[in-house]
Length: 155
Image (cartoon, rainbow, N blue to C red; front, side, top):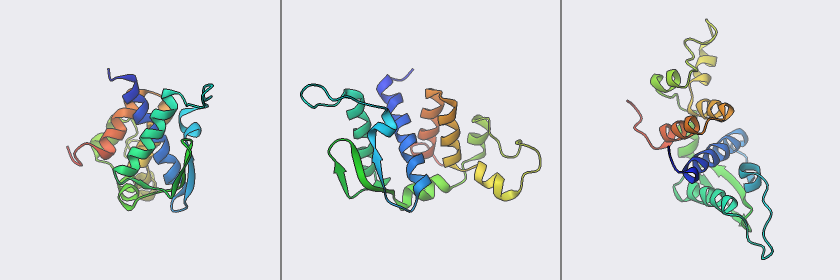
Protein backbone atom coordinates (compact mmCIF):
# COMPACT_ATOMS: atom_id res chain seq x y z
CA UNK A 1 0.00 0.00 0.00
CA UNK A 2 1.36 3.39 -0.98
CA UNK A 3 1.73 6.29 1.41
CA UNK A 4 -1.50 8.24 1.80
CA UNK A 5 0.05 11.44 0.44
CA UNK A 6 0.95 9.62 -2.78
CA UNK A 7 -2.60 8.27 -3.13
CA UNK A 8 -3.94 11.80 -2.59
CA UNK A 9 -1.47 13.14 -5.17
CA UNK A 10 -2.83 10.77 -7.83
CA UNK A 11 -6.42 11.66 -6.97
CA UNK A 12 -5.65 15.41 -7.10
CA UNK A 13 -3.92 14.98 -10.46
CA UNK A 14 -6.84 12.95 -11.82
CA UNK A 15 -9.44 15.51 -10.72
CA UNK A 16 -7.43 18.43 -12.11
CA UNK A 17 -6.92 16.71 -15.47
CA UNK A 18 -10.62 15.85 -15.76
CA UNK A 19 -11.59 19.46 -14.96
CA UNK A 20 -9.14 20.87 -17.49
CA UNK A 21 -10.07 18.33 -20.17
CA UNK A 22 -13.76 19.18 -19.69
CA UNK A 23 -13.03 22.86 -20.25
CA UNK A 24 -10.46 22.45 -23.04
CA UNK A 25 -9.44 24.66 -24.87
CA UNK A 26 -10.84 27.36 -22.59
CA UNK A 27 -8.62 28.66 -19.82
CA UNK A 28 -10.18 28.22 -16.38
CA UNK A 29 -9.32 28.95 -12.79
CA UNK A 30 -8.36 25.73 -11.05
CA UNK A 31 -9.25 25.99 -7.35
CA UNK A 32 -7.55 23.77 -4.78
CA UNK A 33 -10.76 23.55 -2.72
CA UNK A 34 -12.62 22.13 -5.73
CA UNK A 35 -10.06 19.35 -5.87
CA UNK A 36 -8.99 18.65 -2.26
CA UNK A 37 -12.04 19.90 -0.41
CA UNK A 38 -12.62 22.85 1.90
CA UNK A 39 -9.77 24.22 3.95
CA UNK A 40 -9.71 26.63 6.85
CA UNK A 41 -6.42 28.48 7.24
CA UNK A 42 -5.14 28.54 10.80
CA UNK A 43 -4.89 31.62 13.00
CA UNK A 44 -1.74 32.65 11.09
CA UNK A 45 -3.41 32.31 7.69
CA UNK A 46 -1.54 29.12 6.80
CA UNK A 47 -3.31 26.38 4.88
CA UNK A 48 -3.39 22.73 5.97
CA UNK A 49 -0.81 20.21 4.76
CA UNK A 50 -3.52 18.58 2.64
CA UNK A 51 -4.36 21.87 0.91
CA UNK A 52 -0.70 22.64 0.28
CA UNK A 53 -0.08 19.13 -1.06
CA UNK A 54 -2.86 19.62 -3.62
CA UNK A 55 -1.51 23.04 -4.56
CA UNK A 56 1.91 21.45 -4.95
CA UNK A 57 0.45 18.76 -7.22
CA UNK A 58 -1.00 21.46 -9.48
CA UNK A 59 2.33 23.26 -9.65
CA UNK A 60 4.04 19.93 -10.38
CA UNK A 61 1.70 19.34 -13.34
CA UNK A 62 2.90 22.63 -14.80
CA UNK A 63 6.55 21.85 -14.11
CA UNK A 64 6.16 18.53 -15.92
CA UNK A 65 4.60 20.20 -18.97
CA UNK A 66 1.04 18.93 -18.53
CA UNK A 67 -0.66 22.27 -17.94
CA UNK A 68 -0.04 25.99 -18.31
CA UNK A 69 -1.37 28.87 -16.26
CA UNK A 70 -1.02 32.65 -16.16
CA UNK A 71 -0.55 33.14 -12.41
CA UNK A 72 -1.40 31.75 -9.02
CA UNK A 73 -4.21 33.19 -6.93
CA UNK A 74 -2.40 33.20 -3.60
CA UNK A 75 -2.10 29.50 -2.69
CA UNK A 76 -5.71 28.86 -3.54
CA UNK A 77 -5.87 28.46 -7.32
CA UNK A 78 -4.16 28.56 -10.67
CA UNK A 79 -5.41 31.45 -12.79
CA UNK A 80 -6.32 30.70 -16.42
CA UNK A 81 -5.08 27.12 -16.47
CA UNK A 82 -5.24 24.97 -19.62
CA UNK A 83 -3.90 21.57 -20.66
CA UNK A 84 -0.78 21.51 -22.79
CA UNK A 85 -0.83 19.85 -26.17
CA UNK A 86 1.05 16.89 -24.71
CA UNK A 87 -1.54 16.31 -21.99
CA UNK A 88 -4.52 16.83 -24.30
CA UNK A 89 -3.20 14.41 -26.91
CA UNK A 90 -2.36 11.80 -24.27
CA UNK A 91 -5.75 12.04 -22.54
CA UNK A 92 -7.58 11.85 -25.88
CA UNK A 93 -5.57 8.85 -27.08
CA UNK A 94 -6.91 5.32 -26.97
CA UNK A 95 -5.51 3.36 -24.07
CA UNK A 96 -4.02 -0.07 -24.72
CA UNK A 97 -6.57 -2.89 -24.65
CA UNK A 98 -5.09 -4.38 -21.48
CA UNK A 99 -5.92 -1.16 -19.58
CA UNK A 100 -9.53 -1.03 -20.69
CA UNK A 101 -9.94 -4.72 -19.78
CA UNK A 102 -8.28 -4.23 -16.38
CA UNK A 103 -10.53 -1.25 -15.66
CA UNK A 104 -13.59 -3.42 -16.26
CA UNK A 105 -14.74 -1.11 -19.05
CA UNK A 106 -13.72 -2.93 -22.19
CA UNK A 107 -15.61 -1.16 -25.01
CA UNK A 108 -15.70 -4.39 -27.00
CA UNK A 109 -17.63 -6.06 -24.16
CA UNK A 110 -19.83 -3.08 -23.21
CA UNK A 111 -23.39 -3.28 -24.37
CA UNK A 112 -22.94 -5.38 -27.49
CA UNK A 113 -22.78 -3.48 -30.75
CA UNK A 114 -21.68 0.04 -29.88
CA UNK A 115 -20.94 2.45 -32.71
CA UNK A 116 -17.21 2.77 -33.44
CA UNK A 117 -17.15 6.40 -32.26
CA UNK A 118 -18.58 5.41 -28.87
CA UNK A 119 -16.11 2.52 -28.56
CA UNK A 120 -13.30 4.94 -29.32
CA UNK A 121 -14.49 7.39 -26.64
CA UNK A 122 -14.80 4.59 -24.08
CA UNK A 123 -11.23 3.48 -24.68
CA UNK A 124 -9.52 6.84 -24.13
CA UNK A 125 -7.29 7.60 -21.17
CA UNK A 126 -9.60 10.41 -20.02
CA UNK A 127 -12.52 7.97 -19.89
CA UNK A 128 -10.43 5.57 -17.81
CA UNK A 129 -9.51 8.37 -15.39
CA UNK A 130 -13.15 9.44 -15.06
CA UNK A 131 -14.18 5.84 -14.43
CA UNK A 132 -11.45 5.42 -11.80
CA UNK A 133 -12.59 8.59 -10.02
CA UNK A 134 -16.20 7.39 -10.03
CA UNK A 135 -15.08 4.12 -8.45
CA UNK A 136 -13.60 6.04 -5.52
CA UNK A 137 -10.95 3.35 -5.10
CA UNK A 138 -7.60 5.04 -4.50
CA UNK A 139 -5.61 2.09 -5.84
CA UNK A 140 -7.56 2.14 -9.10
CA UNK A 141 -7.11 5.91 -9.42
CA UNK A 142 -3.36 5.63 -8.79
CA UNK A 143 -2.89 2.82 -11.31
CA UNK A 144 -4.87 4.66 -13.97
CA UNK A 145 -2.96 7.93 -13.60
CA UNK A 146 0.35 6.04 -13.59
CA UNK A 147 -0.63 4.16 -16.73
CA UNK A 148 -1.72 7.38 -18.42
CA UNK A 149 1.45 9.37 -17.90
CA UNK A 150 4.18 7.34 -16.27
CA UNK A 151 4.07 3.78 -17.58
CA UNK A 152 5.20 2.42 -20.94
CA UNK A 153 2.76 3.16 -23.74
CA UNK A 154 2.46 -0.51 -24.62
CA UNK A 155 2.72 -3.61 -22.51
